[in-house]
Every structure is written in C-alpha cells, then in structure tokens.
Length: 161
Image (tube, rainbow, N blue to C red; front, side):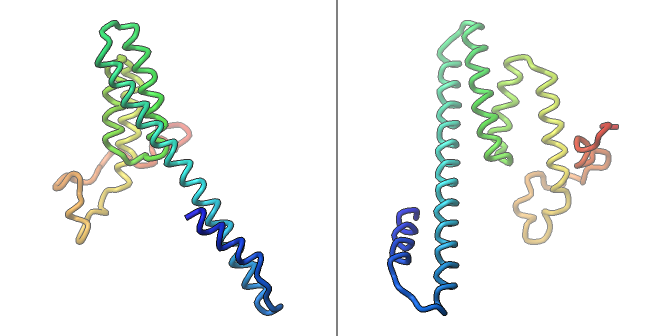
C-alpha cells in the first residue's frame, strides 16, 4: 500500500494540470501523503505487536525451561513487560489480560493483580447493556445482570471514594 501510494504521488507530482485542477491535485497529494503516514504507523504498530508476542512466547518458554526461582522471576518480569506492551496496543484482548493475571500471581504481586482486575472490571462495566438484539449472540456473559455498585468511572475520580 505504501509503495502504491508513493507511485501515485510521484505520478501526480510529474503531471501538469490546469489551474482549475490544481486544487484537486493538492488535495489528492495531501490524501496520499496522509495514507503513506498512516500505513507507516500501522506497519510500525504491527512490528511492535509481533515483537511483543515473540517476547511473551520467549519468556514463557524460558519460564517452562528454568526451575530456579531467581531465573523465573527475571523471566516473569520480561513477560510482564511484553504483556504490558501488547496490552497497550490491544487493550481488549482477554487472553493477554489472563496472561498478565497469571504472571502477576506467579510473582505474588497481589496488590498489582487486584488493581489490574479492578480496572478491567470497571472497563467492562462500560459495556453493560450493549449486547442486545443483534449483538446478543456476542455477549461474553449471557444472563449476567448489569453491575449495580461498580461504576465505570470509579478510577477516573480524583478521590476514588
């Protein structure tokens, strides 16, 4: 996509046009430049995602291979770092959240684990009531009632009540 946009941009730059078409040409060049920028950023995000996934796999492989608690702790820290990177790109990936919970539990970082699941629960409250009619098929918790006491903006408040 990037090379196609660059080719179209170079052809546009080399072509002569009348004054009436000059504005349209500038608009097209602007759109093509924006497309190149967006594609480049997307490609960078994909590369970061692949690197994070590879790091998670490598860390899990090392955790399975080593039995010493010192090495396991170092591998858990690496895995946690990669999982956090992946979650920053894909915050709705429940598999990544599950991996993070497992890593935090294996590290006995209970306060951080509790904080993570509380934040996740508050984020899920934002979805209460949207799985109706045609979306009912995709409800991850069919039949579960809407949250009564948990508020989606709990962690957004200054004082945290």
